[in-house]
Figure (cartoon, helix red, strand yellow):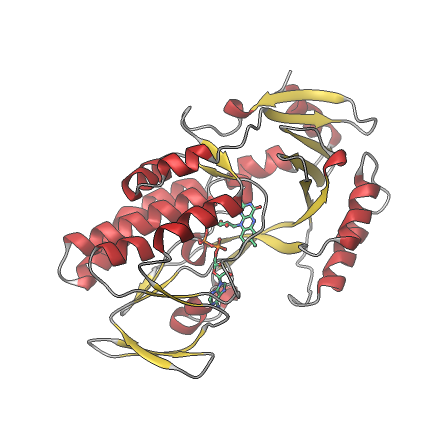
Length: 350
Ligand SMILES: Cc1cc2nc3c(=O)[nH]c(=O)nc-3n(C[C@H](O)[C@H](O)[C@H](O)COP(=O)(O)OP(=O)(O)OC[C@H]3O[C@@H](n4cnc5c(N)ncnc54)[C@H](O)[C@@H]3O)c2cc1C
């Protein structure tokens, strides 16, 4: 979004809560429409260069024997152009593209928005203020811009009855170029291994109710995951040991963001802030890049921003609805509820 707004002549300020671009996460997919978006931005070659050599996903049993193998092209693929890269690499590529042409405010966030007919007055956490034509919230699932312009998070969050955590583990727990997935009913442990130094673990579990935890209390969150995986076999005990040491541990609820409108006055939302699809869809980054491009195109093609915002809403709504509906298939795939369903899923890879 920053790239396109600059391209169309705006002075752009990006506000990031972290002290640098936010890294972390397991590999993500750039597929479908986002490949075209990347091509238009001139970053497709860089993305392809960073493509991971992942060959596939192996379903494992408790004795660490392979029960099924799905090749990477068989997993939710849209086309042979789909590219799986590290989230860090995508962040770096996007940042390199804009960092010399837009201003960055790191370790900062917006704490107040005051709109009038011609602009938005923004107050930042560091007590500075600025007058802007538009504010585009691209600040993820727990968006601060959304809270200020649209209201409390709870009204837009649709809990999917699962939790997931991500952290780095020793690479000897994985196999180069493959992801290994082990399930018991309602739990999933996966190890992704894509370079010689380390691997990523993803532990997810279904939960009938919301688990209340402090978003800033990492030790409490680690205990929640440890409890959910107590007594589970395969490599889970080693993964839980690694979890204790991990300094990049992340836990969140599986949820989608659903909103009746993504714009309010001169404020618009893109990406997870407006329509997070949840990781089992494998489409978070693709949807965010596509949405940003649709909004930027609408703003370039319409002098009146209200018309542009309407075009964005109308054009992108069916794309989001269709994609978000696929999450239940994704959840059945990664988190089967019974031993029979695990076996049926594993047999897809035979
Ligand atoms: C650390 C992390 C790990 C992730 N791991 C995975 C993964 O393993 N698999 C997967 O499918 N998806 C993952 N995601 C989600 C994935 O990145 C998004 O679905 C997708 O890229 C859409 O991106 P987005 O820009 O809308 O949101 P995000 O990628 O979440 O980016 C939001 C940005 O806004 C910043 N931010 C948050 N709140 C504020 C605020 N109040 N003020 C200013 N800045 C703020 C964040 O630090 C971040 O840089 C992860 C996201 C994060 C932040």
